[in-house]
Every structure is written in structure tokens, then in C-alpha cells.
Length: 512
Image (tube, rainbow, N blue to C red):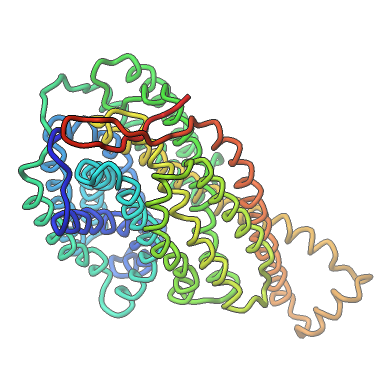
């Protein structure tokens, strides 16, 4: 397929639609189950803590399989692997939906995560291979839009389906989407698959990847509920993760056909892109996790209304997609990224001004503004990744960068939820210190609440959580500004014209 001409017209539109639907379906599934855990736990007769394994099982299996995309696509071909992944996702979604016990559900979620790890990186690789080079920026903008919108739609859709139908429908909804996507991709691209090659399988690398990614993902998912390093389980998982990651990096670095090609990090733009992507996504995703926690836990919003408050981020993200798609072909990517982090920072400081009496419109407005910068963050970084490697290594590079981005999203979720509680305890203690007989305001508050100390403590906790929330938003604003200098460590990417026998093609190249 490498030597074939780009696709145009309706066929390209359908390919874009199919790959985007598949990516949307897979990314949606990473968040849609979150709101359904209490319902699943109740229906299957288990505790909510046991229900968390429904999320952990999928995340761990997905994290393990994603870096193997490059190896598997070279072995079987990108189109065949993508079609298999989508069909496998459909089948496992049905099996998850009909599960009658927690053991069945966790087992099928492991299979679902394992078969779907290739969907996101391959969808981007397939788009880039079939779009004209001068429209690669547009392809990545369209792809990134699904990554932005899907996690927002997940909790909303999950809540609606669980409340009005059954938790099984959060899995069944994947079936029609997956069927359409798999049929379109196979029919449109079966004659444009990548060349396959048989190579020695790095069994040791696979084993190390399973242990390293699995232990780290489980440590991050289970850490907060097990009081982190006070738990022998978390200590053990951390030790195994550190040891296996160290061994895996050394082994894969020197292996001729590595499962995970860490040698990509020798390319400066790839290294900068992954570092900025991971740290920036931590700030972005951390805020996305914190906002619903605050709205539901402190402000008293329902799951649906907290979802509606977060949703406006998708409006400007969709509107800006064609603009960003064109800009990345014409403007220095470092300028676009700097703009994104400035907006991220402004939104972080804006959110830090939230209060307990903040109206819904004031809470929603920063989300709307944030949408103007989300694709300006994702698209240039993906551009840096794919232009750092040869065309036959795009799937491998995208899989590796997506893996680390997903991993740091898990880091962010764990760090934010832990920090939120710890800062609350700190502020609660400080506020409680002021409740003495000498403090007239404190005494008046107690009397207003009918001398009900439980109610007073509840109000103190609410105030403390509010202060903790603003602390974290302030921190995200500051850290986003600190990321701007790192962006400028990347080499500039220019577009030059290379003559060929038949036509002139725009090619993005790194320039020292």
C-alpha cells in the first residue's frame, strides 16, 4: 500500500468516517462504564470496590496490547489487524453485556481490552496512509476530535443508558457502530493493506510488557482504594512494575525486532512530543476527572448535569478542526502548541475562581473556551510523532506515544483524586482550628445550624473540598505555562516541495 496513490472523494470520506467511528467507540468505552459501576455492582451482588475491576481489567489489558500494534501490523497487515480488532471488540462487547456474574464480566473485559488496543493507533495510521500528504494535518484534526469528544460523551451516555435501560446497553451500543466501521474499512481498503513480513517473535519482550504494563496499570487503578503504599499489594505491584520496566527497556533497546521500539526516543522531536503529550495530557485529563468529582460531590449536581457542564468543550473543538488542520501545514507547530498551553493555563486560573455559589453558566463557560485549544494541543503533537519516523513505522510510533499518553492519564487520575482528598484534609484541619469560643463568626455559624456539630462538620468539609479544588486548578494553570519552554526544544517542521516525475508533493521534514 505504500506506493499507492492517496484516496480522494467519497471513498476518503467513508474511510475517515469508519476509522473515526471505531476510535470513538473504543475511547468511549474507557469512560462509559465509570458511571455504571454502582448499578453493575448492585445487579451482580458485589461491592463497588469489586466493581472497579470492570474498569481496571479493561485498562490493564488495553495498556498491554497497545504497544504491540507495530509488531502485529507488520505480521498481519494494518487493514486486517484493524478489522480483526473492531470485530473482536464487537464480539467481546456482546459477551460483556450478557455476563451474569462478575467473574464473567471481568474475563470478557480483559478480552475486550486486549483485542482493542490496536484500534486507536491503527485508525490514525490508516488515515495518514490514505490522505494526501498536504492534508495530513486535516486527517489528524479529524482523528483527534474523536479522542476529545468521546471521553466527554461517555459519562453522559453511560448515565442515560444505565438509568433508562440496563447497564448491559453500555456494551451493546458498540455493536452497530462496530459493524458499520468494520465493513466499511474492509470493503474500502482490502486492496490497500500494508505488506506483511514474518519475523522472529520477541517472546521475552511480550512477557516483560505484560508484567510491566499490567502491574503498573493495576497499581494506579487500585492505589487510592488501598491507601497507596500503606498496602502490601500496592508496594508489591510498584516493585514489580519498576523492576520489569527497567529490564524491558534494556532488553527491547538492543533487540533486533522489539515488541516496543524504545529507540524512537533517539529522535528529538519524538522525545519532545511524547514528554509534552504526557505532561500536558496529565493537566488536561486531571481537570477532566476533577470537575465532575467537584460538581457531584460538592456542588450537588447529578451525573447527567455534571456531564452537561463538561460537554461544551466539544463545540469549539469541532468548529476548530478544519482550522487547525490547515494551520499545522502552514504555521510552526511550536507556536500552535504554545497557544494551546496559554489557553489551558488561562482556563486553569479561571476555574480557580470557582466558589460554592458559582452559577451553572460560570462553570460551563471555561469548558466552552477550552474547546478552542484542545485540537491545538493534540494535532501538532501527533504531527511531531508521525514526522519523526518513516512511513512504515507510523503505526508503531503512534501506538507507543498513545500508550504513554494513556498511561499518564491513569497517573493523572490517581494523583488528582488522591491530592483532592489530602488537600481537603489539610484545609479542613486549618478551618477546624479556627472554631474556638473566641471566634465569634464560628460560634454564630454553629448556632445557625442549631448546634448540630455533624452539620457544621459537613459544611467545613464542603468548604475544604472547595479550597482543595481551587488549589489543583491553580496548579494546572501554572504547570501548563511551564510546559511552553519544553515545546520549543523540538526542531521546527517546515514544508518543502519535492519534485517527482508526475507531480509535486508537499513533504513535512524536520529542520535543524
